[in-house]
Length: 215
Image (cartoon, rainbow, N blue to C red; front, side, top):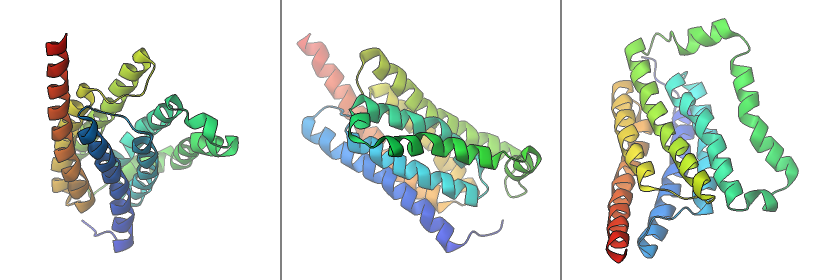
């Protein structure tokens, strides 16, 4: 397997730094409130991390990394809009944020034969491993689909207990994929999140138990 240049790993680590920062911020305010919260900064940092991780996936020719970013990105924006983001941001910036992933996808798929050859028949990634990694990314993305449905039904942005349970399962698969791929970005980035997911599950269960006793 050909080693990627250091600067490519630097982009990946920076993306994971944004994702880790969002979890750290959410974790701190959740610990203080003793209940799971969904702060705007969580979603803003998510957008920055998503941009960078998408670039990293392209540079690494890794479809499994890229896959999850397309679905979760717009859910990040939706949650920010639920918290009044649209009212505070210039319309031009909103348009750029909305169209950037579409433009990137159009560019990548301009030659479907080359796209298929690059991402689905990559010699460095066996097909079974690509399917395994993609499955982890799909499961990881499903946490945001679940979060979106849950929040939409309640007309407010929130991070329910199920979100953290799905996160924990998806993270475990991605860590295993990162080990097979010898990818330090995925291993280190997901390892921090793994701990935060477990802690949020503990807080969520405790909060749910308290509410049941109060009821």
